[in-house]
Image (cartoon, rainbow, N blue to C red; front, side, top):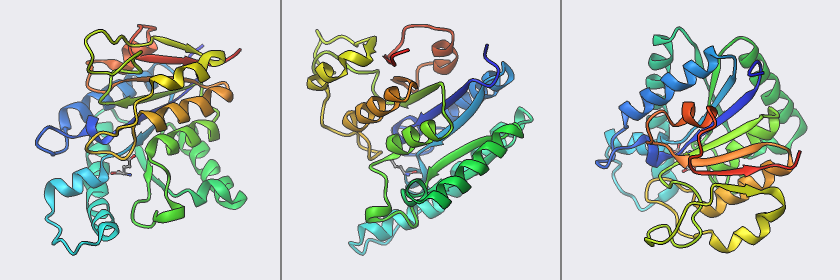
Length: 259
Ligand code: GLU
């Protein structure tokens, strides 16, 4: 059953950074261990990882010129190396190769770019490689930019016809009230037909490190379940989160597509 089931895992900046703003190598390593285990169990795994800008900030001091675009370019250009270097080493401990794939919105618009990207990903997967995908922050500016990596992960999941998209962030899921209110509870399951009624519970604010917030996760989930992809949103620092989700444990919020 698991053979060739495709899982796209999206990891947000806040999952991959510590409170001090450094790369959280323990969490990164744990996620790689789990992805390796799942690949060993027969799943085809793709990772959409944020954290390049955060990693760049943790090591480099950009002399502020007031140019926000330049600082994002410089930080991501430095940080992406750190990030992919860590992934490479961690995956090699499991005798798995990972690879770097950087995308802009343009790659999903034009037929040629789309076909090239899809061809590359298919070949990586068939060779047992785990693609580690991020936005190409160096050139993704204005209209070339995704809303955030949630959108990129959703597009990737659709491109590879994934069975499941798991979005790991620093929130535990979608709550039926303000997430910090003691009486708010996580909504465990959202069926495709009730998705419109859920939108009132979606909080606008975004977290400190990354660009995405619950609105974009919700929009990504809404589009993906229309294509028959199950979407799960959960806290990325929960121990063994991927293994537990795949074992069917009820953690976070699951969007259930129609059959
Ligand atoms: N691509 C950005 C990074 O790697 C993150 C974008 C987002 O927060 O969604 O830092």
